[in-house]
Amino acid sequence: MPPGPDNSADATKSGRNQGNGGTMDTALIEMRGLTKYFGGFCAVRDVSFSVARGEVVGFLGPNGAGKSTTMKMLAGFMTPSSGSASIEGHDVLRDGLAARRALGYLPEGAPAYGEMSVEAFLEFVARIRRVGPDAVRRALALTSLDSVRLQPIETLSKGFKRRVGLAQALLHDPATLVMDEPTDGLDPNQKFEVRALIRAMAPRKAILISTHLLEEVEAICTRAVVIARGVIVADCTPAELAARHPSGRLDDVFRALTEAEAA
Amino acid sequence: MRNMLIIARRELGAYFATPVAVVFIVIFLVLQSVLTFNMGGFFDRDQADLIPFFSFLPWVLLLLVPAITMRLWAEERRGGTIELLLTLPVRVWEAVVGKFIAAWCFCAIALVLTFPMVITVNFLGHPDNGMIVAGYLGALLVAGSFLSVGAAMSATTRNQVIAFVAAVALCLLFAVMSYPLVTEFLSQRVPVLAEVARGLSVNERYLGFTRGVIALPDIVFFASFMLFWLVANTLILQARKAD
Ligand SMILES: Nc1ncnc2c1ncn2[C@@H]1O[C@H](COP(=O)(O)OP(=O)(O)OP(=O)(O)O)[C@@H](O)[C@H]1O
Ligand SMILES: [Mg+2]
Image 1 (tube, each protein chain N blue to C red):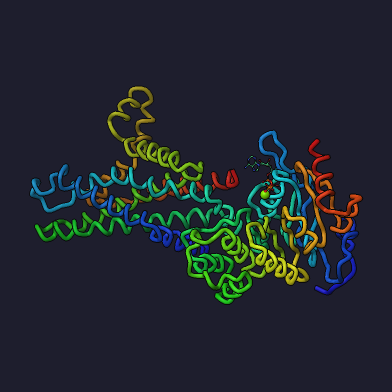
Image 2 (cartoon, rainbow over the protein chains, first blue to last red):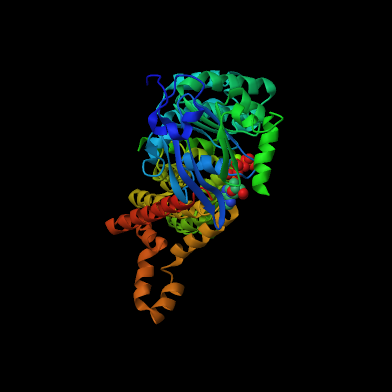
């Protein structure tokens, strides 16, 4: 895709935030009015935003805000009560298989088959995704898992398990990545590594990550979407977000936004 | 189609990655031998056949097959791996059939390991080996039927105990449907249902195989029975995979 100026199609939604470079094109992730009810409880209400190639969008919000629920709908695991979403133009409901083929997804908690070795697990995913052993080697190297590749996943430490989940999501080098708390449980060095990895991939991909670490948003995100009680309360660049509070600190803004909503 | 086999292969590997497989097979073999030799009076009958062996088999399967299937989906739910599996580019039915095939292969392995019985009767006399082969085919079909029921029950819950109990109860129902207890009760009230019950009974269909008769209607019955439960399994998962 040629690098170009703001695309007219999504200029209304995310155009104002695209100040970080010239590699944008149309949105690879699109959500239109996503809503999810659990019984009478509305976990996600009318969520609409999109993520274009070159963007790293940080999805923020307090516990129970609806981040994971939104991501599960994007991955085709949960069915929205209303609204729709698409991955690289494939509707996640009507064309779910194509959407899932395109998407790299790290579920919350990075689930994996514990009895399998790291390598066997990645080989299983690679077979399903129709990519070869090269892809497994590449993913192992990207996530520094080479040293434990023959170890059963259930015997790994939490941080290594998380990295197995990351490796699985990156296996087919997807253009679209949705990752639920990718750096949760990683040590500072590994956090640094994973952030460097995300930053390096960013120009070629559309990336949506959820996180509770506000410094992570400042470090790698080109945009921040804040959700509280299922409703989006902010969608702008981290700098713009920080400027909303006199102190200029993201945690102050985060607290003000999410507590005001909860009150 | 290919995904189905990839999933089946992973599942089968998972059985043997833990001691569960060995424990299961040992229990199956011990239980089956004890029943055949002690209660079935294998030697006292002075007959070179496997009739006692085959007559106990469905009851042993009734208990042990739900023990295999209870973890099938319940464990994936509990561990969250169901989210991983179903957000890969696979169709739900491919995952359902893949798991079913793996479990069925596992049962087949357990059945094959009873081969010393066959050797024994051949050593002691001149059994009708065609009848024995038919018996094994019938047993495999009964195992597949119970598996398909158990897998569907496992998809309804994240609790393995509930999955086990529900599977045993339903399998028992389909096992005894042709028994006088059920049919007499029904024929006094709704005679049509008595016929239906006899037709739907897994054990009734199995009986023919143990006598060495491989009848097409019975094969069709088992195939449709399994298909029905696999479809049910797929629908249950589609409707509530994230619950
Ligand atoms: N399967 C479910 N059934 C009922 N309620 C659910 C279900 N899944 C999530 N919820 C509820 O939906 C709300 C949003 O949950 P979600 O997991 O999306 O939050 P989150 O933003 O990811 O939180 P966290 O930061 O703790 O991960 C919560 O109140 C949760 O209890
Ligand atoms: Mg979450």
